[in-house]
Image (cartoon, rainbow over all chains, first blue to last red):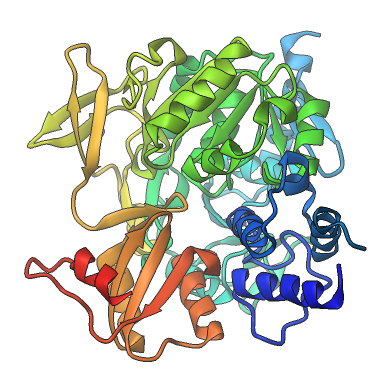
Length: 81
Length: 443
């Protein structure tokens, strides 16, 4: 992902998980904060799909266990590095 | 392998197993270690083997156990301790007035003299919304009756295996543990959700046969390829904890049907320990949408359109504080559920919504009037349910993120399950309800 796309992904995480505008999200992982539970997870998936116009498959949904994983998954869809 | 050698409990974190025979020995031994005289333990219901054994040993020893979520907000824990004056705290940070017995258990320095009723075994919360930490009082007889009846209704065998996909402080989650143990089946203690790869690795490793969910779980799994994720032996699904869209019920029944099993649709309340009725797969899809017939030993009647249940699993009554823990059975086995419903000619129950403004969000029962009263701290407020979320309307500026998070935590909900919207004025209809059409016009 390019820096602009990464920033977009950070914004998706902050918005979906109800974090402050400047919150650091790069080291976030599933269940590391109360908002990222199973409901938060499905919201993240939906928000990522909308923001990047991608469709995540089963493996991607259950592997999306951290911000880094999300960046890797979205990066693959966008065809960049 | 003989039935007694089959695993009763499996800890998914470290892989430790305890057979039914070893579990029985351990509970017997540990029950004798607790001091004589009935006590109350406030337990963080962590799904780990040692923790579960400890609270089961307390129950075996005739003590009373209050199970609460391990992530309980500190202010709510404080309130529970003040209200109920537990004799032991299990799994909480050391607090003043208590002395540590070991790494997990602390005992109160000055035990409360107010007595605990001889029959009291278990205290569970009905709702996260209650300002007063109201609990349901359950006798050992009710817990055993419900576990046995559920095992029978699900036709559980020692070959069955379920994972704790729901919190053990939640009546439905706890019923998985009790009913599978009663049937000689296995319970995998896991804190993972069905949306994590680790859960499915574990499901294959231990050979799950049952998957327990609430409507949100099925909604989430609908967009995944459950057939690809689930091990071959996983062939039964149980649904409870709120109304499931019949299309989802049909989908998962068909999916499990192809694997030789099907969907059990269940209905219950914490006030009835856990379950009251079960619709077995052999009634699907003919009775899709019904919640089934009463479990063994239960009866359902309809009084003025409201479901009334009668059975051994009905609670002794509610508790608001330690004062109430000396009280005996106040319901005589009869529970007015507050749910509207009808029985068909064959005795199958069809629910038609709840009386009053009590709703379910994430399996938690919330009284919208109470939620509204709390939100009024932030200005003129209204509360309603939209989709799966609680929606709070405020006529004025919204509270900041920290206040919103605290508000959600007070209700026992994750912050994302509470949506906020600022409106110019609350669109009340004449009947005291929110004018939904006017609300949509505001948005």
